[in-house]
Length: 387
Image 1 (spheres, rainbow, N blue to C red):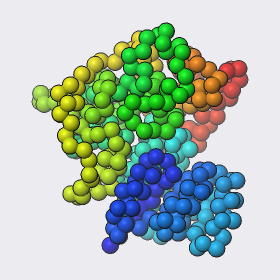
Image 2 (tube, rainbow, N blue to C red; image 1 turned 60 degrees about the vertical axis):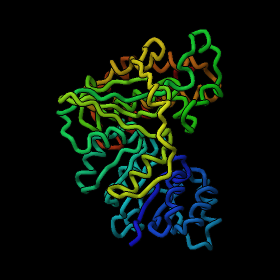
Image 3 (tube, rainbow, N blue to C red; image 1 turned 45 degrees about the horizontal axis):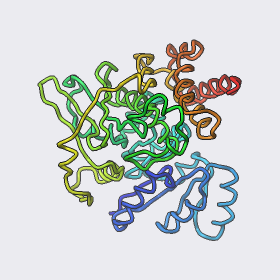
């Protein structure tokens, strides 16, 4: 019987990688739904190629164009996620949540009840809404797999081990394109320079987050949430080759790590073929890298945004939503060439310390709407900042 799957954000890099995997094994999969925001041409092309009968395109203009194009193509076109019960009379086997940004959180939350397993690559869902997501997973008996290479690796190493057995988790970071840059050199870098990640092919937003190291701040929050740890048990190590993705030191003295190429198809493949021996073709073991791992502790002077880890509250709160929103705002300004790279870093840190955002550390999200209200509140302040 074919495995029924759904891809939220199928035109993203993660979505495309998953489709590449599915294409090589079409006989074992049936895609029930694909979604996108504005890329209607890419979405329609995917739907035709994989014979998908249901698509969601959330941008209104793109939705109207899609409706016209698909009028006689026997494809059901929806604009939002309010018709999931109609699309899925029964639970599907697998959902990949790969919509980028805060816009992916609500679809991720809504689709949990319609799937047996969900693989989440949407950081914001885990950073901002994990208590709500976790509750929904438990309520619907839906299994969860993290897709970020770091959290996938931690999960694989733990393999259902008791979290109390963990002494320390180390998440690795490549250091991005500016690992060995001086302050003087950093002051001259361009958007193009910041987008030039040495190891990974990623979207613009996540590439900038890698350059500032803000992505690692978010990944520490994710690890704390997913594996129910306190922040003292999680650290960042610089590993420029991106071959080792996580290390765990256990209380029994053992140290375990997981290695794989800098290719997101590996964690994606393993989330799709869970508990199987399905092979993925990869390069041979790289002994040159393994013999020259060269781990380094994070330098907060070089990457000042890692100091934000000291500002994080112990319990989940709306502050994490403020943090995501602040970062989104200033990254967009940088990508628009309205601020320099050093200003990007300084402004994110400056506003993360503002008292009117710090007060959110005492407030938890009761529902998804609370998160969206907080985002609106933060954006209003930032829009009035004159930056």
